[in-house]
Amino acid sequence: MTLTLDYVKAKSASKLHGLHPVVRQATERLIERSFACGVPILITQGLRTIAEQDALYAQGRTKPGQIVTNAKGGYSNHNFGVAIDFALLLPDGKNVRWTVGPAWMKVVEIAKSLGFEWGGDWKSFKDYPHFEMCFGLTTAQYRAGWVPSEIAMAKALVVINREDEVEMKEELAKLTKRVDVLEKAAERVPAPKWFIDEFGSGDLGGVISDPEFTLEGWRTLAVGLRVGKI
Ligand SMILES: [Zn+2]
Image 1 (cartoon, helix red, strand yellow):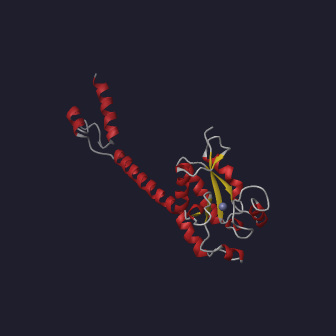
Image 2: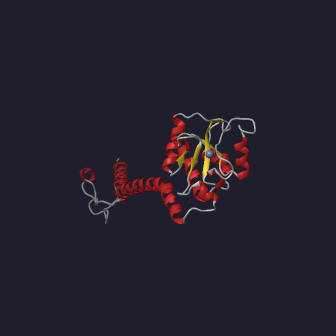
Image 3: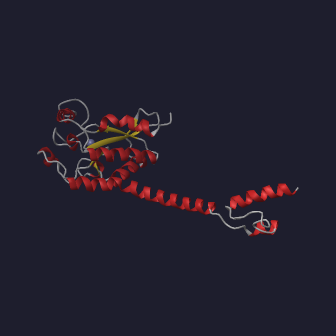
């Protein structure tokens, strides 16, 4: 199957619930821009409740399985809606891949350009699928009930929307150029030299009172006159 952006976004929709609104916006851009680069992704984790975090922490310690986190409930930024995890979505639209290769690193690059911090950059416990956007607050501060400041959120939004603005300006410049070309093409001009050479004058010896047409108009007139000559 060929994956569409709508399909890819819908696959991750449930994991976006409960995220901080700015992080949610950044995550949506991440899905879109990765897709545009040919790398569909799945958000595998967004907000995680304290109880869910405790259950995850138990995995590989008091419960079977591999250790996947070093954070107890309240000690992960997932618990405050400012972190996400991702995986590469395979072309079947169902299965995922966790291989840290070029496609993975492309997503990391896009995420960083959106202002996310990558868990793969951490020194002690490398968390390759993990991104977080903390607005300058520590997990301890979130735990104590702090919320991101207006200014920190505004700054984050500028970074998130930066690329869109650049693209929009480029599109606008292209459009303006195109309109210029179209307007020039539609400009009414006196008879071009080739018309006068062929038919003697622009007003055809006084037949046309206001001999100004577009270049296309002169060509059409010439075709009509040539047919009429026969
Ligand atoms: Zn994570």
